[in-house]
Length: 371
Image (tube, rainbow, N blue to C red; front, side, top):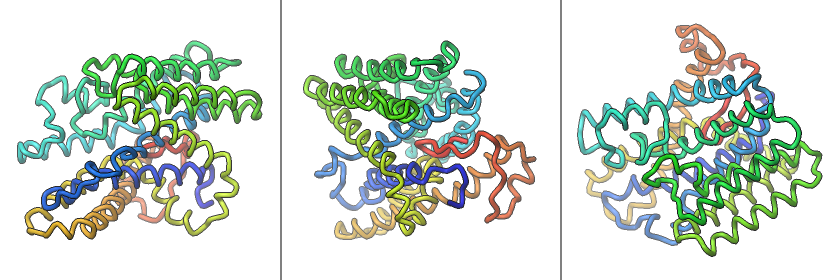
């Protein structure tokens, strides 16, 4: 591959997950002139499964690389330094949009110091953050905090990682039984969300690989079986999410397990691999792109029959803008903040030049690239 140290199988998973999220939100581009929305169709039960795939991939990747960090503080610093700058930029853009037009408020976020500070710092909160898709990153932050505590307490020695994976499943099971939703009014209940089972599945599968494929796979299968069974007693919203998480876990495990076969498909790799690298930028920017296009389409007086052409154009544009953001903003920010390149040089490097990576680079984040 042209990117040493990259995992094409994981980049493909991220690309497909990001594409599904854009498709899921493509209603934004057509809702002003058409009532044929995916949110009201057969697609609803699987809509957003891309986010579940992201969580499973995240669990796998963090388990894969956690031992590379010398301390819990170094781990958390790397995560925030990688994710926070671009997220803060888009949060600032959303705030500016609301100042320009109060109607342009994502999920009608309340103008309060608490909301603004929590949103800029990616801290868990009881409502959606200013950049709505950031709700999933809040759960990522909780997962990172738990991993940091594991590093601090055990140095990842012995069977601690495997026990940690089971404990993550336990947190998700508690959420399923208690009916705790990802957007529960009390932010401190976030760790008990069923979403934790996604991180747990990816984490335990990596433990299985690290153990030489002995014992752990059956543990993972058992934990996923319990998770699926809890859909029978969970409330409707959590039951749907549990089934999506179980399906996403199976997909991720299969792709990783058979990655050698997948690598024999170079044509798809040329499309999916670059998209996989840009998923964080796609994830943060696509809502802005789709919403803006939808407002323009609504003013043109298009007939309802135009919803599919507009939707397809919007999806393609959402991906294209995200990939441009990756090249023009995400990569330069990473060169500056992570690789130590002076800011002027970081943003002046030739567009096609591949900068040298720091030792921590090459870790694909479920919603971007953890470097």
